[in-house]
Length: 257
Image (tube, rainbow, N blue to C red; front, top):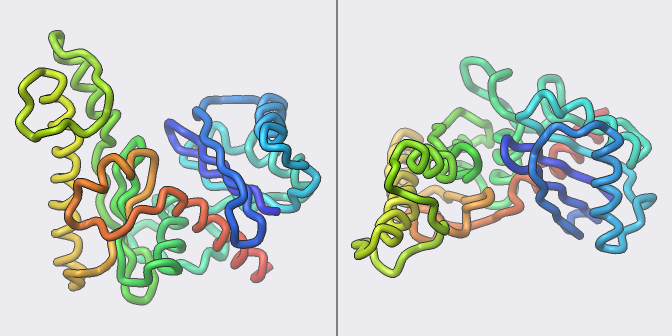
């Protein structure tokens, strides 16, 4: 079984694959942990689903948080018994990266491109709702050719609450109407419908420049279900897209080794 880990700035998503099937998934907060702490956490998660850790034979890691990379690599090697594949320069991902500086591209964006090309085809666009809102553009030949990066919804709302003394935190859900009749409704309207509009506006421009006005647009990330259903340009939602991309990259890199 393959243990795939996508470490983001806010959350880390862990997926356990049995062949192509995602057998289990966990989401934990991203913070610095020693290898021993991660070991205890990971084995505890496996035990909570009655999963025998000895069945894990491989690991694949994507991280946008360099300080935690070594600990994750060490714990994956400890659990799987083999060195994990860490997505980055030199790894055979099967995704050509045609941007000015390929080393600047986050490994999660490469994983998204790999998964989108395999699941919905290319050209296509991925909208990843995380700490940042990433728009990943996949060319007709499956190459990653760049995109757009906007602030994430939670980051934007936290900044608003920190700067506006009379506005307090609200639950991130869609209000009944765009016209809010109370402060809470107004904040929720601005957050949900505002970000839906942001997505549709950027996707429209990306599609135009790509020359693919109807290409598939896949939403993923922690807030994808909340926002994407209010977007007119999103054609599908796949919260596990990045994990699928890590599985595909692991398969390709292992075959090339």
